[in-house]
Amino acid sequence: MTATATIFIVDDDEAVRESLGLLLETSGYRTVAFASGEEFLAALVRDAEGCLLVDVRMPGLGGLEVQQELQRRGSAVPAIVMTGHGDVPLAVRAMRAGAADFIEKPFSDETILASIARALSQIAVHRQEHARSAEILAHVDLLTAREREVLTELIAGHPNKVIAHHLSISPRTVEIHRARVMDKMQARNLSDLVRMALAAGLGGSAGN
Image 1 (cartoon, rainbow, N blue to C red):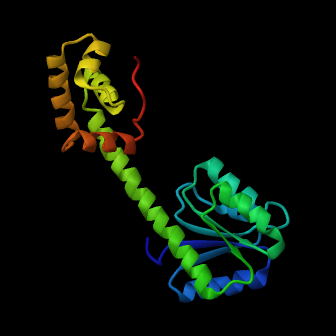
Image 2: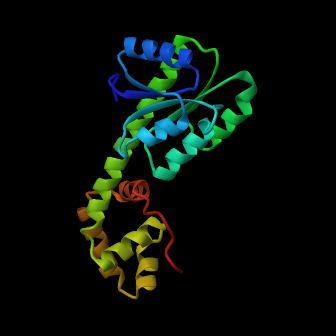
Image 3: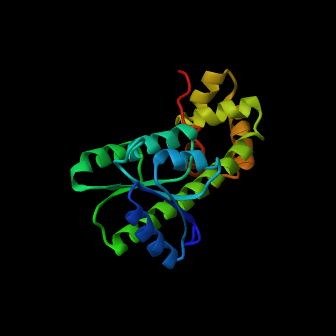
């Protein structure tokens, strides 16, 4: 994601909003500022893209509560929590709850810009991973019910003879299904197949 991304600034301090807005717009970002967490959440559209800079302690909803609401909505906007020295424990809680970063005030221009760059790069990585998972699942949809059963057994690490026993079919039939699974999934080898399946969240163990 490039510097044209929108940065949402949420802070009850007008001076902070103005100084951050100037810095970020000078750096090529588009900014939208809000004086409260409530205002930001009311204006946030469902498919918004960008990064959130939010103060951890504000009247009404603080940074932690705003972040929790983003997660509840399933928003992909990462949150960078800005905190005063005495609010570090709150910021640590936010990090544990999924915040991208926390920055102690006062911070340098370089520090906040680097944090934003990291957060935006994570979005790009997650988007690529999501696209890859969707591609793999599209291949899985091509499998028959029996081929899916064989795939589940392969992911569990079972050899052909064990798979044959579990599914009450012959080892030769397992080999045929296995070859079809590899072809439909476009996997180069078994390790590639397992990596693909795990990346798409298909991991699990078959019954014994």
